[in-house]
Amino acid sequence: MDLLTGKIKPMYFKYLAAAFGSALISSIYGAVDMAMVGQYQGPEGTAALAVVAPVWNIIYSLGLLMGIGGSVLFTTLRGESEQNQKRSNEYFTAAVIGAAVLAAITWLAVVFFDAELLRLFGAEETLLPLARSYLLPVKFVVPSFLFTQLMSAFLRNDGNPALATKAVLFGGSFNVFGDYFFVFVLRMGILGAGLATAMGSVFSLLVMLTHFRSKKNTLRIVNPVRLFFILKSICITGFSTFFIDVAMGILTMLFNRQILRYLGTDALAVYGIIINISTFVQCCAYSIGQASQPMLSANFGAGKGGRIVQILKYALGTAAVFGVIWTALAVFVPNFFVRIFMTPTEGILDIAPGIICSYGISFLLLPLNIFSTYYFQALMRPMASFIVSVARGAVVSGMLIYILPAVAGADAVWFAMPITELLVAVYVILTIARYTKALSLGRNDEIKSV
Image (cartoon, rainbow, N blue to C red; front, top):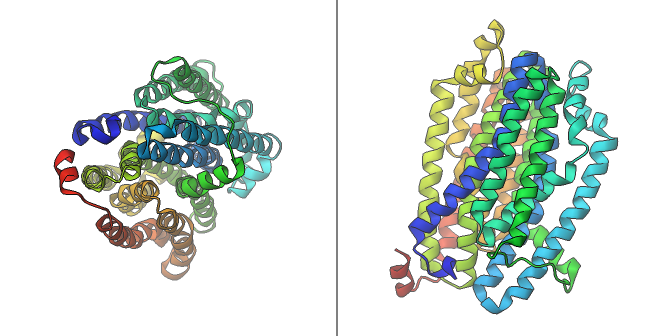
């Protein structure tokens, strides 16, 4: 298998390029929507999309739960032995079944309880009609968003990462064109942005499904033995990646409520911009994890610790580069993002630099912390991955979001994530060192890895 014998450096960057392109275009969905709607309808449109953001986080996270959880186990089995192809396809089949069930539940929730969900996520009466207009076209295609995440993960692990990138690129390109056409040319406003996003997702999924006609395809629908046991294993393995996206929704809801309580709608509009910047940063972090995970899982299954160490070095270096770049952009050119995502008022331009700079410090360590969850998953250490995702996504961050403004003033809320990422990074560094040291490092294996 190429994952077990190929040269690590070119293979890593090949996978990174594919994963980065896929993740970057995915993030463009929300960013283009925010920019177009912000330009067309001003800060109210940006604030409305900030309220919708947790809905996306929930939908995407459920797809990642089945996709990442199933594909990690799929590739680990194949790394152990080429004779495990049927067993590995049982995990693929179970992941498809699980995604279908979750898609049905999510579909019903979005169709029938959209107003209640949006109010829960911080929509007030002025923002609710805009947010519901955006979601209207999405209601028709909710399952496609889950299945694009599922298929993207399995395509990378089935040796076809380029198709996943092409599919997302095609859907993302349509979304960019569709946003402009529907929002401005047809003057549909925020409804048009939702329509473009919905159609782009369907087109991405259709392209991904062509993998089943490819010679590279080894994915098969088989009868899974002990379906519920397999689904349990998938959920345990994929929970951390799932929770990272759910956590974005939780944090957005908490921030929305605290911002409206202490700082007002202008600050909420700026936070809408931060959500989009954070989405880009997280997508960079996802690309590192998604590039590394198939290689890590296969080599862990084969017991090749030396190769795992080499992959880890490249991943940590990439995380450092991404962290420095995004932090520098947030600190030195904050209003660049403001002008991209909306037509700002003077009030927005006054408050945005301080807010974006303060929050943007967290981008320095964010890629490391998110990559660590993929690393721990690949090494079959789900508890460590769980601790990282829950600590940064709910427990530590949630406490700070409520405590800081009450103790240190309203503006202190923007330091909740920088402090969270720092505390979590301490745990991540120590735990990566401990588990990496425990790997079996054969000398011959290390020589072949270079």
